[in-house]
Length: 301
Image (cartoon, rainbow, N blue to C red):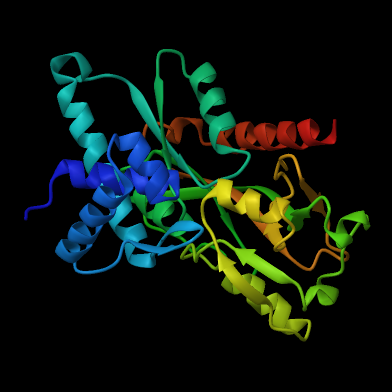
């Protein structure tokens, strides 16, 4: 069996849906058929792209490598399919991790750069995003890093810090700890945690480092990257999760700050210094900071 574009689309659909069942519905096939196809693809690739359990599918470290390249190939293929109509079209490519800046910054760029189309590329790993900027695959990326795991300089890439914020905790609204206005991380050693998979840039290693410094090893029975199953787990009171200060809780979930702010993270924007956005280097961090501030104001309402 040769690797085909439909195989790459299947991998991307599974990653975006977070489960084989939901991805099968999107692709118009059945869960057993998609599961069998995934097994064939992984055998062809020589390694697992996802880990699978009752909560869904999580991307492996090798899977992150595969998916970045799969999305790039599919994007290039779509551009070729536009033919002469798409040739020479003015566009900037914006990538980012989950957070408050990505979509808002895309909107701000579209308004500021008249006649330029903004193409979005969502990716989980900050390190991969910065690498894609350096390779010229992306023109701009909104990323995060953590104390002790700061992103290092990359050839051809400039970046600026947009915000430095404390990490909060998300938990079920009916959880006994939800009644407290703030939580002490050192008191949460007995609680079960749900963490997102390794992002290649210091998470969740940073979380474990801080917990160990406070004298306990966190109990992490759950590892979930997709937002929907994470929210369901929290709403049922089955675990706690570290979250960004700008995390917007859904029904049944609340967010509480940590006393003393033992966990912190930075938001950054990185751009290719030889790319089409280099002439806007002074404005890019300001636009991103304005988008971030707007998200804080929205949560405060």
